[in-house]
Length: 518
Length: 100
Image (cartoon, rainbow over all chains, first blue to last red; front, side):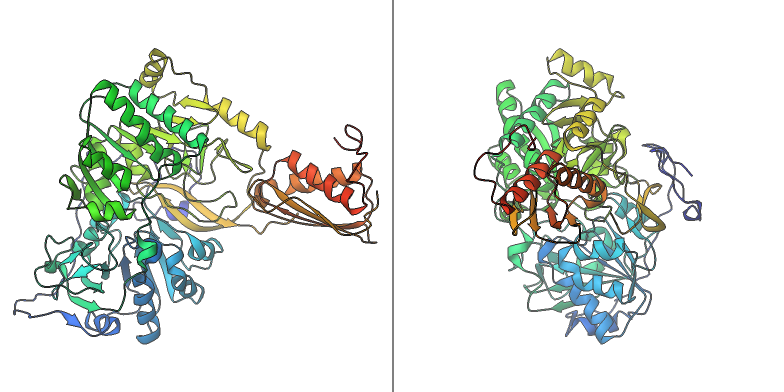
């Protein structure tokens, strides 16, 4: 069936009430019955929940074939925990037919890629898929199609019972002996632990894995002892050099800076740019640099930012410290500055992925967002964005909070160079739709700005401010005139990944790519 | 032109291509790898063959390692490698003639 972004969704996927994407806000006003986990009663006081090894924790939690294990990706490319747990499950307990439900998977998870090839892991649910694991899934080695959800769509699916987590594994920089966890105070700090919170609340069993055991009570806790069954202390949960990068620096690339300046101009031309406005930006070159130019406009007009959300890094913490933004609330910290700031700098708080972006709850932060500045691998003439598949059709990206912030915000700005090498970023049809065009408002490139025709109000704002803009078709034609018209990718029939819209409908599918021959 | 000895032009930087030509007697043997193979492999092949044809290269082993070069870059790298292979890259290049 063809959906609202003109993608053909195979009918066999539309069972058990699954629908195709109908346009944004389609689920508004409908009801959901929340799922609930089956948890063990611990009435008798426990002095400690420490167990000797991950394998022992798995046995204690009655880990079985076919179970769904969840992981969160705050330790990013430095994460040791997901692979450690899967190794114990497969090698020590001999488990098979496992499903991995992660908030993102990448270069740290090569062992899981091996288990997919061996048929031990048969399902993947994630908000990001990169590295070897993306390649093996793209090759069709996973038994069932991977399900890709946004950061908001994932907690929605967990709460709705569409994803049932048997055991959640929490990688905790610090924990006490009963499982109160924090992202700071240890040797592998990650700051916010926002992605782990819904998992801990909705999983049947929760195992905390830490390398720094601290005195009870480890407070304020991100994941709380009331949800935790077992605590395992290991030598190291991650490679701290890869967990948080050194302080994120603002790009010096003149092309990035020019685009960033135009982003700030667009923002300053809208009526939402007033005292107390709210903002989220990505950490990519031009997105992050937008902070710099925005500050200039804020000073000129004597206004302050009310709050900022996101993945947070140093430049936003700087604005907080200078008093130019009143509050920063985050689900993830990208660099050392942000890790060291959360719950330390007054006004810098932690939130869960559900609070951040879940479309089914009653008050996600994204719904109050004025501006979001995001990057894209590709954007097409219908303003649909792809941040998941490469130009070779291989899974190598992450929807993350992209679709959530785009849908919730009043003004969603995509900033990207017109071409990257020989790849036309602005194209006729994106490989995969990860953020639907009806959520995207403005495109800023190095060859011009285009406004979504659905937003006649923004077009007027830009005109009034004297900001030149062109049609997105003009930009696409310009891109093709530079790099040539790309050939269409050749696909097999087999679906290797299902891309869910944040509301749970099917936005697109990724099929297996045919080996290329010339 | 005849490829007399092995020669290389270009780099492996992004948006460039490294073209290696070697003597051979079995016609043009072309080996292409590219970071944009699925979308542009066909066009890269066409551009390389057109350029070799214009230079009247009838035989040789041609290896293209493409990192997303534009057509103009590919063309220049092929021309340069072929000219180097027969010692004609130093002077008297036929700008606007065979070299376009």
